[in-house]
Length: 353
Image 1 (tube, one colour):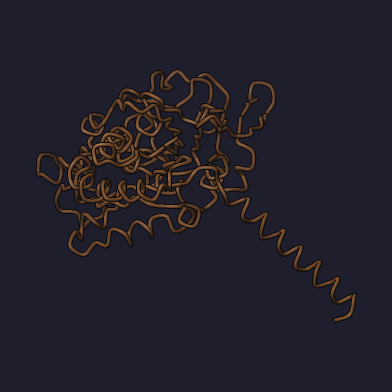
Image 2 (tube, helix red, strand yellow):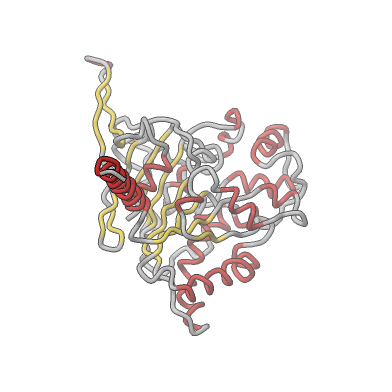
């Protein structure tokens, strides 16, 4: 090999090595990521034919699967404090403890009902594992996307309708859009998702784990489900649930000074009291419930709170302000930087410490 070829080869290998190193550095995190999915309707309609693990993988395939270190899968046809906890969560917790995956800290990334599963884990995992002679997991935070920890009014009407207690054409149309026409009985986690039931599951965990909230406020299902949800909603859960409000009331925003569309103005119907250690960060009226955890880009997002401490590190977004119109029509907006070019999931992943 002559000197020119040798020099060219060395430069190529050096560049390739640097590129690989940069790629690894961009993907690596100080904390491990564990995914907890939301309600899987197909498991309610086809309990015997459900593949819970495969369903869990499919759920996150558009973005999060390749960026996470583990998943906690669970079946929708069981109850949170019943077999979900004993047959699915507990074996996974033992595996995670024995592997020392969370020795340097883990972050739970949840979507929808996964928020409720995570709260039950946070409240109990240390006691469960210590009683089994194992080391508790070091869970430093949760990142809850469209969280249903406060329940959903849709579950209330679903259980009523499917048990024959209440039915009308509006209810029937909403449930067909949300659950599909194959659901014929109220089973499993649908009961846990009733607003009052959800808010009674591990409501005050001893662990002071910060729960960072990412709130959607977009429209889906032709608006048929929104009429049954209190205040603003993402077509499946209302803002009282996704923001982490301490009560199930009608709210329009997680922030008293910023609308969900980013407009800077006083919000008279904003959440004024939150569940312990719940911090709503991102809000957007561009995403609906089932879009915020996927890879598709939908549009600008804004903040409710910013710069939250997670395990000694600051978690926050860079923002910019924008003004539209003039005179009486002038409006001021605040957006998260790059949210017009990146999906909400990408923005969220980028700030996980």
